[in-house]
Length: 382
Ligand SMILES: *Cc1c(COP(=O)(O)O)cnc(C)c1O
Image 1: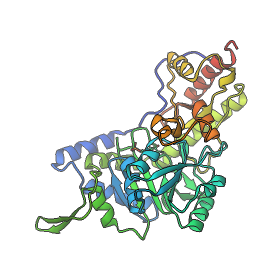
Image 2: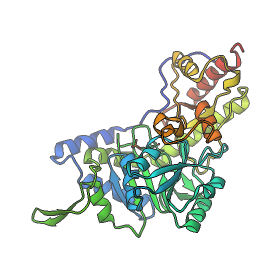
Image 3: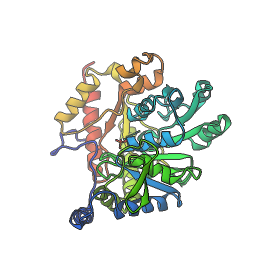
Image 4: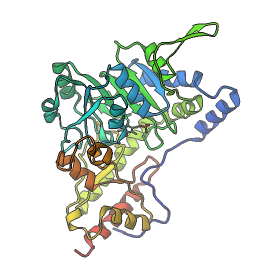
């Protein structure tokens, strides 16, 4: 394999926006109406069609989407919410915003998602809800998760920020379940720049969701209004929705391309193994491969993870860390969490490295990334 540095910088991700989408944004900007309007409604309808006709509302971030979902689920101060310590910190921060307590449950090292075996031991009389996260797009086992939730009368807020386009046993993530929350941040598989969307269960009033989204305002006609709840400022713009509508046309192709690239990574790293490097679970049917993440053999490396990322950067290869375990951040340590509480999440959090993977990346790029990693890791002095 050729371990030459890449001629141009290869980021770990890059959005794919076509000219038609750029033109559609221009049309919105010229239309005289640029905040929430017809494009947001069309985007919500298109998402709903993707999720078997379920009710969908759009927001200006995945974080506010999650927070409003928790409010709609009835999470209140003092309640406990069970989630994974291996996620973007937004997943846990929204629990704190509501005055509730995040209760972490360690991950299954195989899937790197919440360990379903350990959830029941964490349930108390104060537990209100579970937030599963489909890390890197790999879906949590929905059958087992909902069986636990039903047995204990808990609500589920699926943090599907990374799993748009993934499926559970052939059914699109979002088409089933309780609350399902998505993010359209620039790095996600489908982007609006910043944005999010919530799939609502049938027993939740969409009008209440809309009031929580925009200042609690209830319009009564002729300019009259009432406010019965302190809502957020969470509405999406038509500018962003136009990007989302343009992206949706490519979602299936994006997912297919990501799966092909992930297969290529697996094949390359199996054909020319790097000693001690651990690969992700080989799910090419359900995962949307939001990220391709390897675990570094830190013990036998002469470089730290940060040093390795810098060495890759010198070879024009971008790599990222998603994520250090949440409970070890100072904010969460201050709540009483300590090193050793969740050994699997800590281990993955220390070793994980996200390699370049995005639809416009070439097959040759995968080979070059693997060859350069092998060159740095296999040939490094011990
Ligand atoms: C991106 C992400 C979020 C937050 O979404 P934003 O749109 O950035 O607010 C929440 N949870 C997970 C797992 C994410 O990856």
